[in-house]
Each structure stands twice: as structure tokens, then as C-alpha cells.
Image (tube, rainbow, N blue to C red; front, side, top):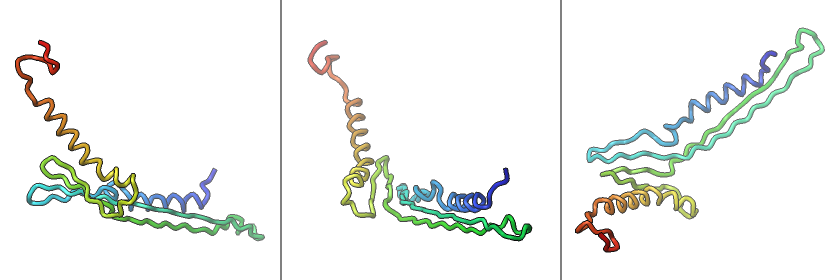
Length: 138
């Protein structure tokens, strides 16, 4: 069965959206500073597309397969935060409003992971004295 013209329109539109929106659009390319800091821009990407068409039933047999259609798309890219990596620590600098609880929690997540990692590291590096267990047994 032959491909309907609307399928071609939709394929081209989706391919163009794929070209505009890739992983480098959401998490940008790293920016390295002279002091060893790495900055990763984070963006929010929204997009939509529409496509439509109509077959025309012509009275002339030569015009039996007339088709008219169109498609369009829109993309919105909004910077929302920066991940700052320095000396093994990750910080989030959020650009948008933090009134949403979920956004606040996601903003604090990298710092929380760093603190938990440091806590675990400090506990494993603490030497035990005299071969005793923490409860005093040998």
C-alpha cells in the first residue's frame, strides 16, 4: 500500500523537531573555567506540532489523487538551571521560581547526594581503636 501524503508531512515535521531537540539541548555542553569549575546549563524544552490534510474528490479522473495538507511545529527552549561542579562537589543554581515543592526538592538533590557521600566516606575512613567493635566487644 502506498504511503499517504500526510504521512510524509508528519515524518518531515518530526525529523526537523528531532534535529532541533537533542540531549545537548536539555543538558548543554560543559563550560570549563580556568579554576577547574565545570558548568552545565540545564534547559526545559517544550514542543508541539500539528499536521492535517484533505483528499479532494475530483470529477476529472486525472485529478483523482489530489491532496492538500500542511504541518507545522513550535519549540520553546527555556534555561532553568546550571549544574556547577567544583572540587568534586555539585551545586545547582536554579534560575526559575522555586515556589513548587518538587522543584525545590530536585534543586537540593545534588547537594544532598554530596553530603551523604561525604558522610559515608568519613565513616569508612574512621579507624577503630583496640580492635573493639562499637559496642565494646572484642
